Length: 193
View 1 (spheres, rainbow, N blue to C red):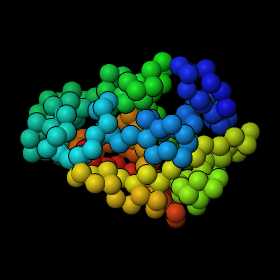
View 2: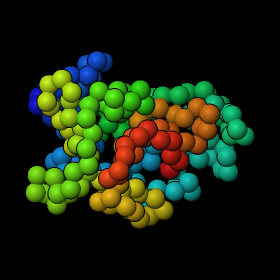
View 3: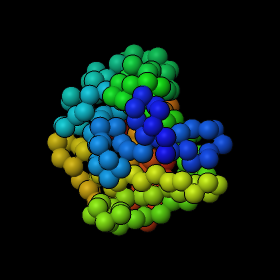
View 4: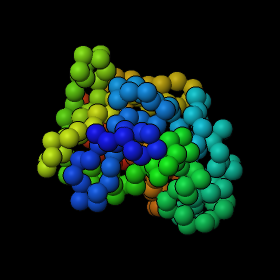
C-alpha cells in the first residue's frame, strides 16, 4: 500500500496497465466503509438517484450530455464515450490524478486478479468482494454497498457495484459498471441515474 496519491492510499495489483487502485470507495474513510453514492457523471453524492433529478436528463429519452444518439435517444448528441474529468466523481472528491476506471480497466481488474466473495471481511461485519493479484499477492476489498435508486438503498450486504467512466455507446442512457454478488462478478450496463 502506498500513500502518495494526493494523500489517499492505493494498491499496486501488478496489473499490465500499471493502474493503481484506491484502497476504498470515493467518500469512504476505510476499506469497509461504503462511501458515497453517485449518479453516473455527477460529482456530488446523491440520495434520490432517479431520472427526474439526474443532471443530464432533458426529458424522456432526451440526454443533454454523453449521447451517441442511437436507439432513439435524442437531445445533445456529442458522441462522448468517456466522462470528462469535470464529471468524474473520483477526481472531484479525491483530487490529484485520481479518476474513475474505464470499463477496460475493470475488465483488466477482473481478468488479472482472483476474485472471491468474502463475508464479515476482517471481522468488520461487512460483506463484499476481494480482488487479489495473481502476481504480487496484494488485494483490494470492495464492500457490498447495494444499489441506491429511487431514494433507497437495495441489496446492501448481498451485492454492490462501482461505476466506470465509460458510456455504453449503443444505449447511451446506460453506463458500464462492475457489478458483483456472492456468486459472480461482471461488467454490466446500468441506467446512469
